[in-house]
Image: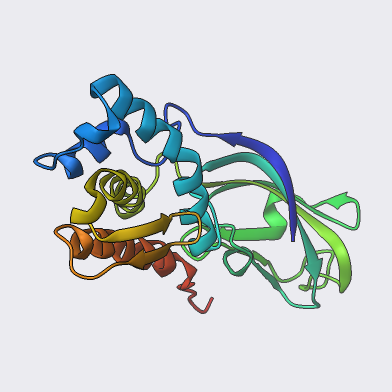
Length: 218
């Protein structure tokens, strides 16, 4: 599958907000980062790498893809399983083009919850998408207008873990934390090591859950 289209995040610059991170850090001494402006600047600086880490773990992003052209291979079957290609949740299908010819809306049916496009019987394609490499193009809207709550919290936890590890020093017993690949190296003991580990582990689990495709038979 390949895709071209417009990526729209609306009002959402990242999956979480600075306030989401600050709520996790409430009650912890993060003065080593600086004043409130310095803390906000550090949090914002961690947003891109933490967002990329979430996407890498999930094997997908959590943006809104509007009017995106998804190129698929025809497999001689009556359906396109867009969900198995990562195109989910499916919001709308605007067109289906097979070997350069656009199908009429009456020639196929869209199952949005399952992210499946299925041909109706009796159409010009004899009920199957002909075999070919990249011979089917689907223009669709899919994704999220604002990340799911568990993904929002996962990014906030990754950022908070990094900030707390930088502030804790010996008390945190976290010698190194690389949120880009979730690598954490711990010293012995530590006041915050358990919390930091839990935040990173929970963030990783939340993102990884989205690798599990929930497909249904149609």
